[in-house]
Length: 536
Image (cartoon, rainbow, N blue to C red; front, side, top):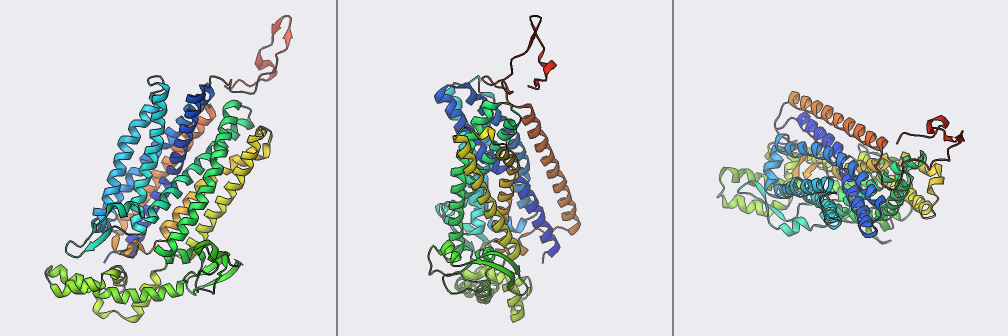
């Protein structure tokens, strides 16, 4: 049996690398589309300021893209190094979308992003615009395949377990790609990237407007990002609702944890706005509720009900009891693949095989499993409620805050008075970290909410890790955190440096319009003599 500490360290290492990597991904997804929109305006109007915008934000995209690739490379290697049993168990399904994603990222994306950066003077306007749109499309398609792989972990459709090979086998590629979880999550994640980029562009543009630098570029960038952000934020909230609807049927334990729901109440059910879940006692120590809202949000009706954690644990106990014969049959088939009786027994109980694996953590010999061990395994089937509950609320709160910000930003930029709203420009600077925090909180909801499974209902996390030593895992974890922290510092340094230098513009001098210089004895006084800024 795998050491529990090794499993925990493997989880922490993968979580750390994924959270670091996910700081770069949303900005790339959104900024690539904003660039394409800016360049489209340039090509259709011929105004050079929009070319300056595309080139400047393209420079920041390149910094983020390069660091994103560097942090993403090691993630896929971890499947083979730290999660070898998982890789063997689901490699036939999981490997296909990851391979396609690699082709997208390292061939399509990287090739076109090179043409985009170096092709301004070598390609025609139309050709370069097509390349920029292909970069945007490639980055989002790359995300699609990652989310296909992740979607299988959340809802394993299009595959079946083969008791002869002891592996999951792909049965339907279309079902794998078009599962409701994959499609809703892909759109939700992509649009979250658009929100992230919109906040980033408005924040940097506000920085320039506060200093009266690059005013033409900053005002236009702010306007495009604000309008883009309003639409994107409404979209991400709408798709978040769709994900909750999917979770109600696919991952009821995640939904119950998100809502801090221990016991189902009569419909219409109230929504826990604030609560402090106590997993040991199966209760919330304190609650602030909104009447009827949970039924409306999750079931879109006043008569719908959501199962509570107590009922789900009872269901898990029954699934464990049904899954134990499937695991016992599998052990017999490993000794004799032609054992007809074992194969018949497996087929009768295969739907709950994963729950049989779940109890093996406490009862390696399933012929001696006790009711107490079954109950303990059933309690394990519930994710960490407090962490999922509060991560979900932080994500929603950040989303509503961004919607309010974009509403004000769009209002003032359409009035052409945003440059006069110092309070809003300062707020835009403080908003820059918000979408990144929302993205990280959303990732925690998705991944912590799936526990205790690597593949929901099929493969428990405790079985999935490699058999490394604790010392190896601790050393590896420290190394990854140190390396990725260096990457973050490099990203911040390069971004801040590029922003301070600013764009090279054709139509904007880069400073507030100069005041007329005083004249003495027929000669103009040098600008430095009366304090005009010359940093550009």
